[in-house]
Length: 440
Image (cartoon, rainbow, N blue to C red; front, side):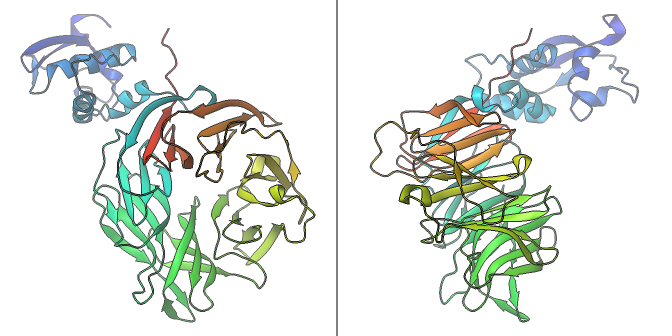
């Protein structure tokens, strides 16, 4: 496709560029250049040079990206400027794909660190679907797009944020504590770009709207939102809302002797069509993990350490995550020892995989509780200032992510082909990416 009919010239800011239809077709139908093709992808070049009143240096970089698939950014071009120009041409996805590859925990490299976003310790970080993230600091949530540019913060006026969840790249759900005398706790849907409140999620009990504290969040493929709830009367349990309408659709009330309203973690299991609910030490003196089936309001599986003949270090489960492929729940204690509970056995014991004490270094002055995540068949566990990666059927430790600055990791999250790690001591979060595969 090198004949004259396949060539087109651009005059970008006074500089002339010549390329071919093959190169421009790599931009895709929805790009600026896609409009130059007909329905059969035949190029319809103008009779004269096509003038574009944009930055020619950035155009050269983007044109080379379309030719080779490789992003080579000269030192004299600010990255933010290139992102702005790529947005104009509809090539942001191409830039992002060239910057980092498909997520692989064993190949992650530290890409960036963002510091000084708010006073006080961070409480939670959540990865967005497009490579951005949001970070909660007390009553304030800071929102970043995939270029790590901060949008308008969300301020809940001294109401502590308990959890954050992304509906999509434009909408964020926040759960917050109730403030006595004000009745303004619960959950709200906010714009990720402006920080504006779009609507609140209400809890109704005996046909009355109740004030409540919302805790852990989870979402499913049927556009449902789940949240642990604590009210002033009997509204203890797990509430369910429709993401689109914001209306409450269900409520699973807490049974005597069990704990749902104080849950630290919720996880929707698509294959089992159930919700994992975990209430863990130190929020409670004992740990409670259960699977709830909302179709018939039934607790189909549960485990608790009440009465278990365990050593004290084994008893203190700090986090839990369900692993549907192996019909088990993975738990972690304060020494980063992994344990597994068989979902096919009701109330079974924990099978600890190792007593090796993976954390050999000196404990920091303010250690953080370990957290777990499962992504792409890899298991991740944070402990103090590092994140361990486990792979294979026996979950062997294969790599560890660590940096010397920032102190203990209080939370981490994976999404948009990135891992975000929030540090507690230096008010900083790190961004880890998988380098793109080399182009041969």
